[in-house]
Length: 222
Image (cartoon, rainbow, N blue to C red; front, side, top):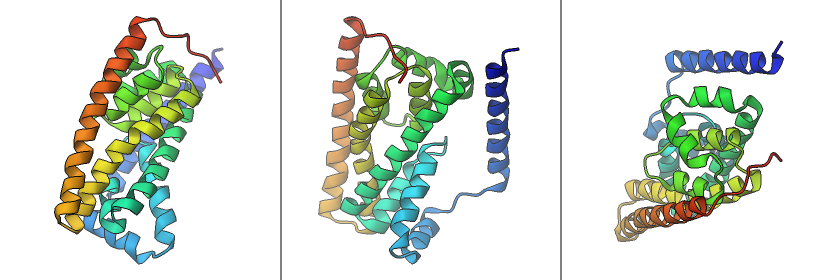
């Protein structure tokens, strides 16, 4: 009996059922209430925010609201640091979950994202992860799961995630900081960081295409 395949499919069903239960029974807090809750925690709010962000980054829940809330609650410098710590932990956790589930199960789980993820990440590496991570509007979770399932090296994935997530986190946190404290400095920061995201996306995409055309190395298990 293919017990590994059976176990993976059982896990997939449990994850799907859990997602359905969450959708009907759990309501995410509004941005205002989230900001108030974090502020009320005082010093514990830092750890609580990082933990919350890690959980969100490891799941299909969009990270946008948490990053913006971080900018509103903590400002641009501290909010960016906390967001980066949380997002890297969550993304790395999702990567290893996908490694455990296996390629077939993860591709089913990705649904409509599967074709794009497989095209970009199959036999991909650092620049492939950077390209997808930098793409405005593309969720984090398919990149996390796809990288783990398609054999992207863990060191390449972690370094690419840490580097390529920074511009996006800066841009989102800057938006939150601008909402909380509208001004020239925060407004300029929003414009600069969003421009940086677009420029780096084009650079990473060109490097990825160049690397792919020259023949990528075979993925290895670590």
